Image (cartoon, rainbow, N blue to C red; front, side, top):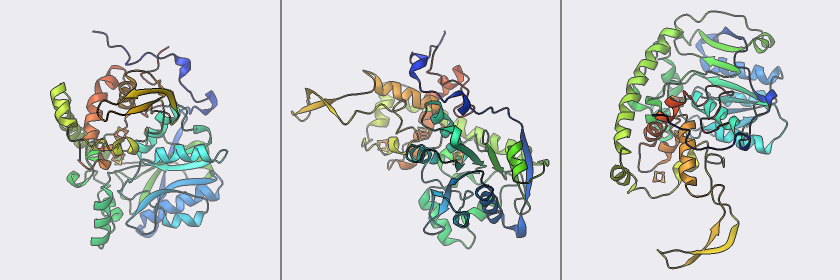
Length: 387
Ligand code: SF4
Ligand code: SF4
Ligand code: SF4
């Protein structure tokens, strides 16, 4: 049986990045080792990020910052190198998918050369958003950071307050071997198979390394030259990544099998959605929520026609929608195709509905059929874009 794309839309209807905005991801990348001074891994990474501002590679930087205290880490734009003394891109916590923040910042601040320090799932979401013209890669330096997984914010704050060792230091203890006790991490992270910073202009890696001694930096040759690093090997990294990937893969397979049962037929689906309060928190938390191509929302301006609301007996104005009937289904399909598995939807759900696995189960067939990996390559066409 041939499976057709989920929706036929004309190619010229899709906003596309201009040719010069496309990144040639085959550009030579150079791997180098950053020596860690006095065993201070976080201090070394902060120092490296400062260099990017000082060497004028970027004007501003979106980076996770410890504000107002170390138990709260949020992505914020900084302009001055000294502000990076509070940066913590290694903190195992994620309150928001920063790709959504990035899209919002770029809309407001045009013309600035922005560096964005992102986790792999944020980076992949940024690439998906670039495909629909929501993120502009021309003015952007993507700085990816390896991610061993993240805790829910409350759990992170609790660990930060209760333990003498910071959650960052605790996580960094496990980088060399790869796996970490997975049950404490967010569900999305337990099943995340894309935890290294691929497709970044600059990647900061620590999985498989003794991070008290060295941290990997992989970047385009011109960037490496400008910041004065020399090429080096990354022994041990591949083995640790493979080991962690195998653990995550197993966990993902089990979660997807469970999720497939939940959406197998209409009665199962109804049972699943029955307790849902339709609060919309899951949609708002998704990095694609604010993008019409993924979430057609009613416009604020109502049309003059009115419809009868059978439940309340009142008449309501009809709102314009980006697309017609089945619009929500179309948006659901597009999100499922581009879902990067960040799990922000699930983290925001007070009912703890396993939304990450459900989205993955919904998108799996589509992604397999089109050999589509969201965020893998800016030049890879969205599966719902047809010529
Ligand atoms: S989903 Fe993956 S990349 Fe994102 S926070 Fe979790 S482990 Fe990190
Ligand atoms: S966050 Fe949970 S309860 Fe709210 S709409 Fe989403 S699934 Fe329903
Ligand atoms: S649907 Fe959920 S897991 Fe997928 S990108 Fe959106 S927030 Fe992340």
